[in-house]
Length: 255
Image (cartoon, rainbow, N blue to C red; front, side):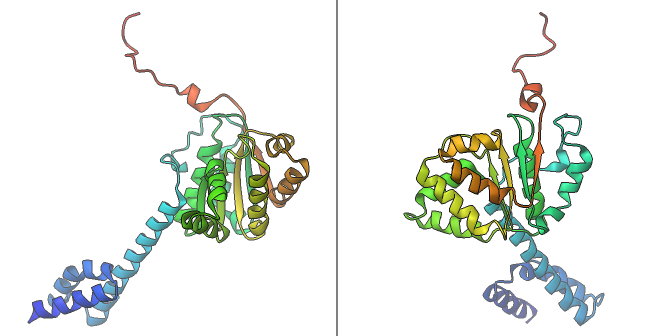
């Protein structure tokens, strides 16, 4: 009889897509049968298990759609690396108050100074705190804009970005952009800049953006929107990758 009732509960859990409750059912039943928990506590524990399961699934979904780089945990940030960003400021950035205030962050500097790692790390923090945050390279954005009118995948991606709390655009203006795509990029940012925060990484100064876009007026309009409520952080120093370059040879071998 007990097994039959258990199967009924499992079937109902499946019907209502309560896999978290289903997974915790055996433990909850053992505690209920032993008399260590009341009926109301038994119910609460099942519902809490389901709520936690859904929270974890939602967090996994957000992390998947964020498309973060493999290395993006700012808990592993090397504060001994000198790039002009004090530890106190990075800690303040990680509080994400600027995100709630719809402030943009522009990380500017040469290759290897930590722009991408910091941007991805802040995006990772945002995702884990429940924000809709996405990490995209400039190539990702351009590819999506090219295919938006031709594929459902690109159309869905565009819609996803228009509802974001935070968008990271990595390596913006690294390469020249043809006029039609430059206009499409402007239209995207113009559509959402008052309701979405951006983190931009670039090794180009604002004056060089016009060269990459091939249009000074368009570059000025784009910068006007990104620099509205914006913190520009200039990073400097030698490349972290070059500094920490590894060798395939045994360092202890005789010379």
